[in-house]
Image 1 (cartoon, one colour):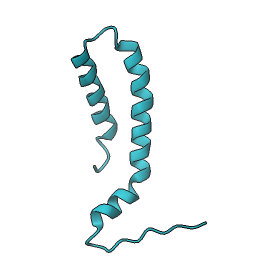
Image 2 (tube, rainbow, N blue to C red; image 1 turned 90 degrees about the vertical axis):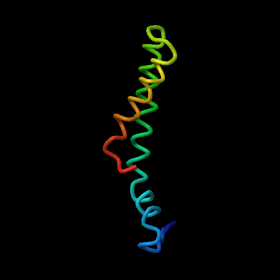
Image 3 (cartoon, helix red, strand yellow; image 1 turned 135 degrees about the horizontal axis):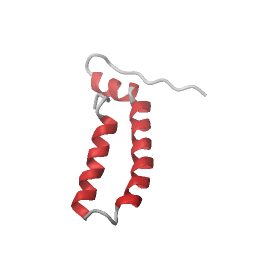
Image 4 (cartoon, rainbow, N blue to C red; image 1 turned 135 degrees about the vertical axis):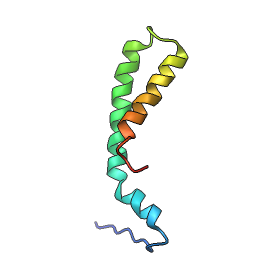
Length: 69
């Protein structure tokens, strides 16, 4: 089975960029969910809810800083 994605460039440049970078986004999301689950389980007793949420968003920012989002 084969599949092709076609884009009308330059009109669909944004959509093309998203499709071309999909594996990078997937990898980043996988790392985020895997690492955060472990880290949050180990720190949730040490920090309040707001600090934990701040930590999560900080980790997301760190993992995605090199992606062209």
